[in-house]
Amino acid sequence: MSLRGHLAALGVVVACLSVACAPGRGSTQVPTINLEVVSWWTSGSEQRALTVLFDAYRAAHPGVTVTNGAVAGGGGSNAQVVLAQRLLSGNPPDVWQTFPAGSLRAYVDQGQVADVSELYGQGGLAAALPAVIRDGLTIDGKQYGVPTSAHRGNMLFYNIALLAKAGVPAPGAGYSPPTFLADLGKLDKAGVTPLCLGAKDPFTTTALFENTLLGVVGADGWRRIGADRFDWNSDSVSEALRQFGQILDYADPQAAALTWDAATKKLAGGECAFETMNDSAFGELVNAGAVDGQTFGEVPYPGTDGIYLAVVDTFVRARQPGNARNASDFLAVLGAPDTQLAFSKAKGSVPIRTDVDVSSLTPYQRSAAAALRNGTVLWSIVHGEAMRPQFQQGFYDAVGTYVRSRNAKAFRTTLTDAMGRQAPAK
Image (spheres, helix red, strand yellow):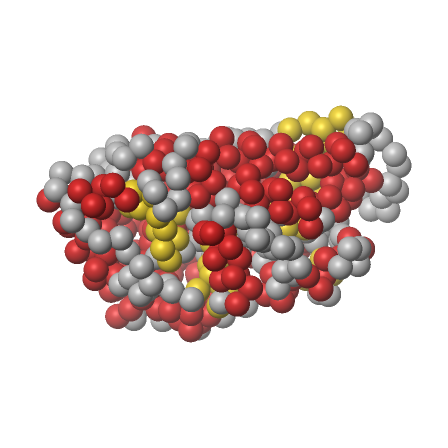
């Protein structure tokens, strides 16, 4: 199913008002021996990271059988369809993966997920989270999910040997959009595929535009988007679309057949030079045998230095799961400092908790942790954090329209139509 389809399905869940959609009330946490966890982690590095979570839970609760309900599909495109269907039928998994802020609120507004505020009083979790992250998990004064770690969405990865082959200097601080475009042209002339792209997963192309737009409008513009005070008819949007179209012209001709992790493997193998991805790509590059600083490098996406576009994988508990106690215990394990550190080592992410010692992580991860703790943290539209699902769907549709038409007016019409159907979250 298309991304439009999965977001539409999620919208049905949010809009659903029938008795069949409503979870039961008054759950008592009776001991059971089972736990089902639904996620979309199926790539090599993702499976290793998910195993870290399961192993940590099993070590603390050895009598419980964990069912891995992972559904393949980068960014959760397929998992969210499965979730929507199960929620509509009144058969939710015990625990499932989502994102904070906009995506989380959609579930909370429909009463599908449990208040887990008690977990924030354990082990100093509440005090250890950056304020912006804690706020994204808090609705009406209550917390509704526990994060595993954070990924930086506005990253650009590159293959060192291919850049050298084309005479392109390795990018560093202050790498600008014009320089990036010029470097893509140099790579193309040198016979190198300039840009890796796993367009089979729709979120990758939309994330490319998201990062390009962020590089043009900056943090202040991004905040206006989130507050629904942004002018989508502005010159800055035209400039972002112009850059986006030029960048797309340098994309791998095989992009439509590649998932995000397949595209990342091509970067690792020297088949294409640049890739913009959240730093899930870092974990996948390392998993593929690439070595940071030797075979690949990374830099904030052009124009976004000092900004941390947060992609925060979060797990929630069904309001009325069959295994409520086990679900709560699983979330408690996720929030533990040792679990967050071990998970990040496998995933390429960084612990959300600011009290975790990150000195054992790679130099890149340490720099990402510093950016999260000290930089400007913003939410991603692509991953459903900055906006509600209805606007997120419109954003995907508008980008898809532009990819097909290269028409800025068509982009704006598609997006404003979506905004008319459902205003963004404020």
